Length: 491
Image 1: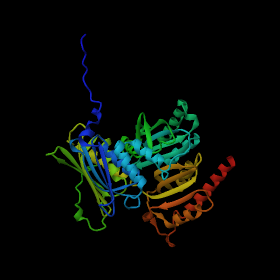
Image 2 (image 1 turned 90 degrees about the vertical axis):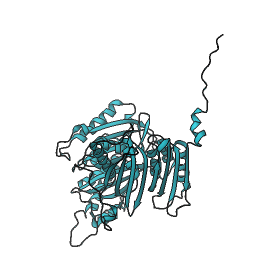
Image 3 (image 1 turned 120 degrees about the horizontal axis):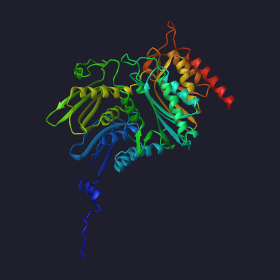
Image 4 (image 1 turned 180 degrees about the horizontal axis):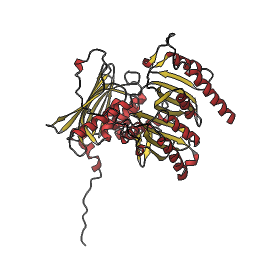
């Protein structure tokens, strides 16, 4: 009888990299070397998008990256991050330290690990209602009051907004919302009705686009992703993938070309060297690209105002544009950030044409600007109910305030709302009369509590100059009281 020989496969073949190099991912968190920051070191077998996953894990726990060095050549990924917590101190929370080590060591920062941390961290806002949620994505040409109109449309359809995030930039709007509605469960007709209603709202604009042309209705889009479990907050499910909400907002804004701003033109303007700026002089965002021919890279350099999540935004954009980051460095000095990325396209080529370079420059500039919200930050907390967001945004709109960015979540029976607002004329400065009136009137017996941040944009009151917004607190209080009373009577 003829003997059949099968090729031998080592059962430990999948672990070969670990047997050669040691563990496939080594994470070291050092709190001893520096007095003012914590060092996070990551050594791992490399893969496309790994840098973004690592940065996402760090930003998901509200860490600020003050300095970093990245090298991912020759199939191995080596990163060093200098990080601080949200208060600007070294990382001392052992639960967060343990999570970072586990998330990066076990799965090298996959979204599922970050999601598991968010679900188990009581400090994060998480919906507790067991009802499944439907995620809705919306993109379109922005106009004053559009977010309020979207909220009103969902309220008219008796949909409760469990969580919502909206960005506005260059006259474009992107919004990701999770709604709870029993009737949407396995009811495609109900979902189609919601989509049709929202697309009508998005298309009902007579404003001109930034380029002076009529709005392109092809940019107006509404898509329902499907039903989500209550523990899946902060992530959007698309088929079998989980995408961080902020990354998804970047992708949506990129899809409607928010990088084509009102002042389009050559973007590769010459930069001013750091030493030529006088102390305290304002410096705009500058992005430029140079060729590194001896290594076959394109070097992308960024100088801009430093802020939290800056590295996530730039790395996210380069990754979504299908570029591979081989080496990078980032640092901050006197509130200003400096980043360098050595990249190639995913097909192995450097950036060859001027048009490709200009597109990358514009996309990075847009990614940096999207999160630099104009106006002051209003934080409101109230008992959650259907139509609450619609009522609040309508009162803001009726009093001449425009929402340019919104983050809405639920914590137990409470709705937590954060809005960046400015007045209809684009003024970012709000009178102290308005601030004090609103805080004094709304933090009393009214069930809605208000906190105002971004004090640098609050203008002191002047007895000789009447404040155009000084009576806003009174009107907001009276209108919300009336809405609350009406709602109580209905109940």
